[in-house]
Length: 346
Image (cartoon, rainbow, N blue to C red; front, side):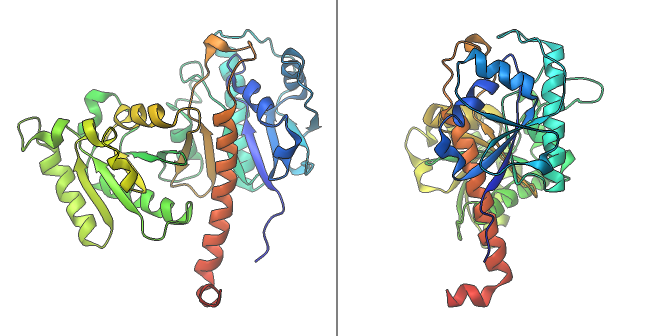
């Protein structure tokens, strides 16, 4: 089996007034970071030089006009725009949001046509990116449409993986959004991802209840009894190791999560609050369910510290490393799925 020598990692630059450019630069300041992959930053050489000078970095950029001209072993910058951009650290700016989308769209196109192998997205501001042309609540929904997939927000770290039945949905609408079809779709996506992307042959998955105490037999809501429990029973009867619904309040504090390969939360904060409490700074936002690999740090633009040179690049580094790991895992999965006799021989 022939592997690519260097995984081409496309990086969308995110909100230029936030910490995105800083953590990108810090992630690749160490030359050893180029041993596993070759980065392609979608921005402009003028813009990245500004950040290099501001943060007094010694990083060297290699300017290219298209991702097809990538130089292996260098920190490439694709010139998505030519003009100088006014940076005002920590400020929400509609114009800066437009540059974030330019970067994201160019990187996504390169991902679709195979010019890059994986995509790592720096944090965006979900408010200033909105326009008539771009009206998605975030990266996950945009990439699902761009790549024609059924995406799932999958927060992953070395010790914990949390998927969501509903992600950027108002809490008042979450329970109505959770249907049998949605449960089947999301659990199937998680199981496939655990096998294909993380090499877990027989994954065990826990599902958290919609209501407190799983509804207490209808005393605190009936959605768990009427929708979630029957759906889980059917999935389990088909041979999958899926368990629940578990009461969310004690699930993480009791360390029950350590018994499972992944946990599926019913709504955004039910899953992300414990995840970020346990794994913040080491966690990665991975978009499962797509034909291509996309990861992101587990934090936002952090306007309050932007430009100060104190942003922690740990989650960005982990996002890059996780994207490479998943790409390699998919290479192995595809090869051995197509060659079962070779797998047995090995």
